[in-house]
Image (cartoon, rainbow, N blue to C red; front, side, top):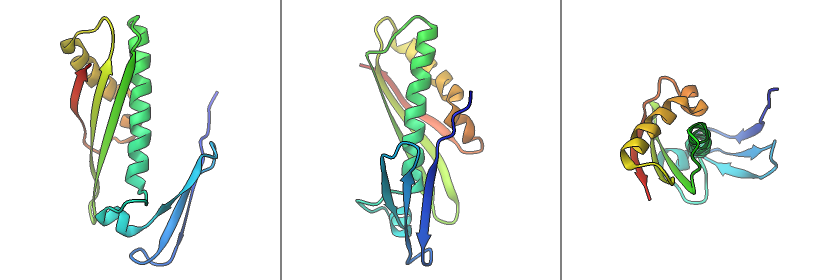
Length: 142
């Protein structure tokens, strides 16, 4: 069975002066404003494609980690994942840095650090980003 998730983007005007919005159609969870200034310079209250990609990557990674732990007979009390997506105007997305902190009874720090790297390679969003450098900047147990 396949599942199709749908989002929609609308844009009006030029790149530099225009604005748009991105809607989460499948979930109906909302519509978010987008503009070039937020993407190129950063701006509060306006999202970017990179922020949305980061949210997708963080969610996917945490799910992949939970799945991998279950295969080892382990259950995380908590998994926190942050994805920092770097965008450079004229170059595009130049990298994604994942930071993961988890509480996993029965797993030590060394095993967790190795496991976190394996999950990075198994996460479907990481795989979709082939050609983009994805790093794991920190993997720590609580």
